Image (cartoon, rainbow over all chains, first blue to last red; front, side, top):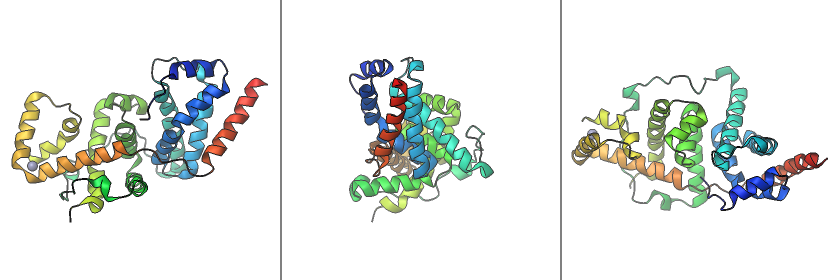
Length: 196
Length: 79
Ligand SMILES: [Zn+2]
């Protein structure tokens, strides 16, 4: 989750009153996060750019409906997640599985197969850009139902309850996906970070 | 608690949402089981890696095209 602007409430009010400058400040604060979120959910740079534009255009058009009960950023993420899921659905219409379809839990499958310890400071083994690429690439290999919960819960740091609300899922459904997603990612990252 | 149960409670454990009794039995298991300790530790590191990962700058041209799209919309509003 990005740092929030101290004067965010005023900026939103000014943008609602028609200030292009205030709206631009809000856009510049959050565009990188919305782009990353869209890229990680859709897995496609073109789609991510469309989502980025749609999110801010919709936010601008609907500013009057933003009631200030949540953070402005949470509201943007809600728009961004919906736009991303629409892209995903359109591109994979042939094999689209609804995100809220129950995921069967096979306990055997969940059990870690490879147990290998990692070095002390995994992030210091790679340059920042390289690490970001590794994390994004392994995330993209996960099923959308799993990667969306990682994006919201672990990258954007929304709570389990907020993640459930953003995805229209129940809290237990988010928890069960999160568990499997984290375990799968952990296993995939073994090859980069294992000791020795 | 056995290894399978540790895995079942892993997310609640790492998110600090286990009640005191479960927490105690889970940590007792971790003291005796190297495999589970490694799984817990590397899963925690996985979460930290994603959590600390800052978004990269936008690819070239993306911000310019976003600005242009917004400018078109903003100018319509004034009209
Ligand atoms: Zn064990």
